[in-house]
Every structure is written in C-alpha cells, then in structure tokens.
Image 1: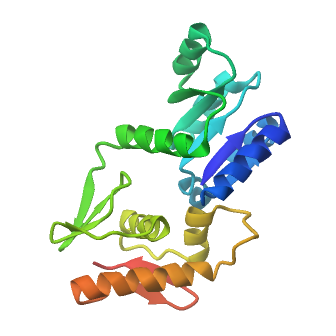
Image 2: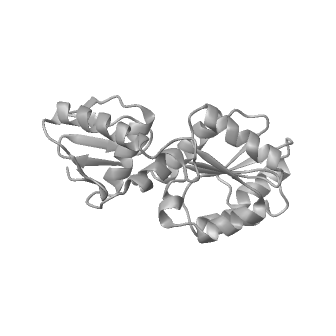
Length: 222
C-alpha cells in the first residue's frame, strides 16, 4: 500500500487513482489528517505501507522524522521544479528519494522498491527448508529454481514468512495486499489468492507450508 500526502485533494486523489489503475493499493491524505492517521494507525496498517509519497506542502521537511518514528517504508518527495537547493534540503530532512513531476506511478513503485532493497539489504532472504523467500521483489525459489508468482501471491508469501510462526488474519493480509479502507474488493479475494498459492507450493514441495484455520487465519509452518 502506498500513502500519498498532499494538501491539494485533487493531486492526492489523482495519484490514488493512478495507483489503482496499476493494481497498487493506496491512500490519500491532506498533511494534517495524515499526521493524525500516522499517530493512531495500528502496527498491522503501518506494516502494509510500501512507500510514502509526499507532495509539495509547507510542513513537508518535518514529516520524514515523524514517519520514521512509526515506519521504515521508503519516503519519496515530489518536486514541481528543478532545484538543487530544494533537493538537498529534502535529502537532509530524511527523504529517501526526490522525483520531479510529472511521474508515472510505476516509476514511483520502482523507486520505492529500490530504496527498500537498499534499506533492508541486511534482511537478505529467508531459507525455509527447500524454499527460499526474497524480500526485494524477486520470486521465491524452490531447490534453487524460481517459482514465478503473481505479485499479490508473492506479497502474501513474503508477509507470512516475515511473520513465520505467527497467525495472520485474513483482514491483516487484505490490508497488506489491497490497502485499508478499500471497499471495491471483498476480503474473500484473499481466500482465492491463498488457495492458488498453497496449491503451487504443495505441488512443488509435496506438503503444505501454510496452515489455514477458518475464522482464525493463516500461519507459515515450513
């Protein structure tokens, strides 16, 4: 999920719509309401954030520090002018990347992924028996061979492995994959993704590595 912050609702709404067209969940906020959301959001909601996109508003330089108190997700600033002074000011404030408008949401997602890989280089990959799960956008591997997965199935697997041994509810997975406050997709979509993912893993590994309990959730058991 991407979080877009801009005092102009039309700008925030435009990027939210762009992310939606590309299949990325997102939320749009004004700067004041974003701060309120950031300070009250649950850990599960914050874990679902893949990147913060900050538009041009007066208080923007103070927001990276506020965000870092709650999340490690990449912070990207939008620039409406080519200015070395402004760019240096934003990097000094803690912004991870600065992009000049206009910019396509796919480029924003790619830049966010690149920042995430740099920030989490120490995370590496998780080996679970014959299964190797990466956390940098690459497909998982089984016996050294890539298991090509659709983006949402890969995200589900990564989240479960990151929380290995813990029970994750359908709602928590939905927030990670589709974003919170998404009323256009039903939570039951997670069941479909999960069914396909478990079948692919079972066919390759010969057994279930994801334990599913009705009404309780899912747990990676290896």
